Image 1 (tube, rainbow, N blue to C red):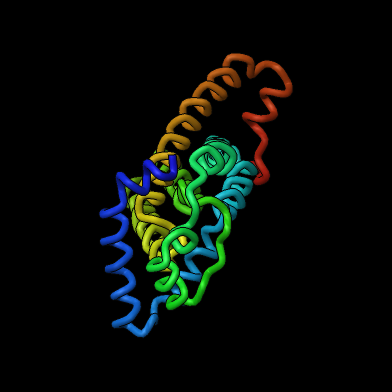
Image 2 (spheres, helix red, strand yellow; image 1 turned 90 degrees about the vertical axis):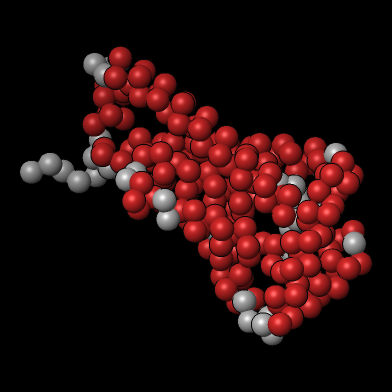
Length: 211
């Protein structure tokens, strides 16, 4: 599978990574700190997982919290425990001398797991898609900027092919949609059996007491 991806997306990946390397050279690699920060903030979807746990504490936002954690969980299962080992695509710098030299120029961010799909992008897309589904679009649409920043940073650091990013976007989107459907089913069951104490507790518990 890795060879198929390399052959099919080879020209596409090369042109984008070459452009990013040229940008790094002409700018004196000034964007490296920004890319490191973005990669750290969105690593493994931790920021979204923490947000999901917080949202679970409030009745008004519990549905979003359930969906958010569900989307992250599905994204992890599909991307990290499924596709990465199945496709087994090495990082760009691990299988191409040109990419390796560009990676060395950037400053060698040492990611050694398989490359496809991008885990950072999967988690970010899953998280922001969930927020886009439930929150006002005038605010949640800013999530597009977050996805773009992660996309740019992972390719700029030469640790992912652009096609890895496309895979991550697709997996994250699918994960969020499936989680949304599962959340709707969960709430249907909770409402149907809300006379039961356990189901009522899940529906009604609120960390902030009503006055």
